[in-house]
Amino acid sequence: MFLHNRINRKELKERLKHDNIQRKTLSFYRYVRLKDIQELRNKLYKDLYTLGALGRVYLATEGINAQMSIPEENYNDFVTYLNTFKEFFQIPIKQGIEDNGKSFFKLTIKVRDKIVADGIDDPSFDVTNVGNHLSAQEFNDAMELPGTIVVDMRNHYESEIGHFENAICPDVDTFREELPMVVEMLKGKENQKILMYCTGGIRCEKASAYMKHKGFIDVNQLHGGIIDYARQVNENKLTNKFKGKNFVFDERVGEKISNETISHCHQCGAPCDTHTNCANLDCHLLFIQCESCKKKMKSCCSEACIAIIELPPEELKEYRKSQRKQEDLSIYKSRLRPSLAIKNKKNDL
Image 1: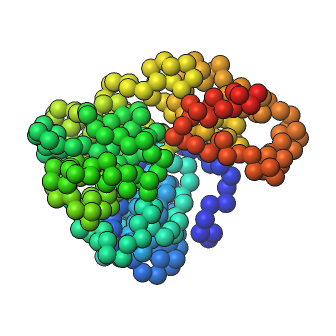
Image 2: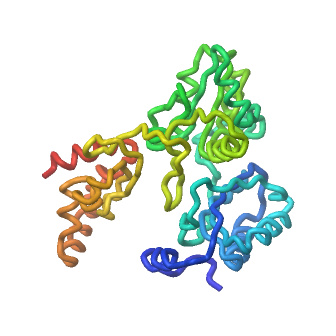
Image 3: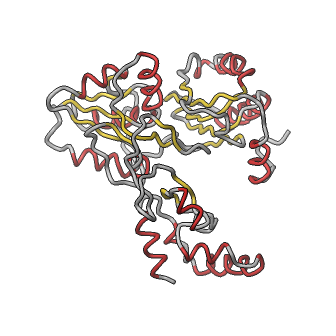
C-alpha cells in the first residue's frame, strides 16, 4: 500500500460529507524519546489507515502530537493498538466537545524536528521539568487568588475568539514568538503564581518548563488544556471561566465553550466568532467572517480576491503564474492581522 494519501482534497472532502460512519474526534500528545522515527512513521500510517483513522500526527525525537478522528466501532481497538507501544502506553486521550465526526478528511503523518516548534536552542533546557498540572477546579480556584497571573499560550487568532477571564493574551503569530515575549512581559514577577493554558496542553507542557528554566518559581498549567477543561466543567457542573469559543485545528475550526461571542466580523464588525479561509486559494487568509459578509463577499476577504476567483480558468492560471514569479503573495501570509491585510488589498485596487 502507499504510505501517504493519493486522492485529491476535493474528492476526500466530498467523501467525508456523505460518510455516515460515526466517528470520535480526539487528540493526544506525549513528550517521550523516540527512535527510528521514519520506520515508526510508516508503521503507524499503515496500521492507523487500516483502523480508518483520519487526522494529523507529528513525530519527532522529542515525542508525538496527534489530532485525529476514529470510527467509533474501532475506538477500543485503536486504544489497544497505542498501548502496544511502550512509548505511548496509557497515553491520555482527550475527546472533542462539539463533535460531528467531520473534523478530518485524510490521514497525514509527518516527521518533524520538534512536535511543537519553539525556537529554543539551549542544551541546558529540560523539557521534562514542567510546572504543576491543575484540574479545572484547581485552575478556577487559583485564578481567584490575589496576585495570580493567567497567560494564554496560544496565538492571537485563537485567543481573539475565546479566552479565560482576565488572561494575558500575547499579540503573536507563533508559539516560538510567544515564549520569549511572555518571559519579558513577566520580568520582575518570578515569585508570583503563574497559570498557563492552551488548546490541549502540549504547548503549556513546554512553556511551563521554559518558564521554570527562566527562573519562575510557582508555574502551573491547565492539565488537558481548554478541551479537557470544558469536559470537566460539563461533567462536574463547575463554574465556567472560559469565555467564547476554543479554536481547534481541524475542519470544525472551533468549539463553543460558552454561549458568549466575544469577537467580531473583520469586515462589518458584527458579533461573530466563525473563522473562514479566503476562497481565493492564492490568498487563503484566515479571518472572522459573518454569514452575511460570507454571502456578500463570496467567502473572500476583499473585493480584490473576488475579482481573482471570478477570472476565467485560463486567465486565473496565468495570473497565478505571474504572481508567483513576482513573489507578490507576501500580503496574503498573515493570519494574525487579517484586518490589516484586507485593508492593504483594498488599497491595491
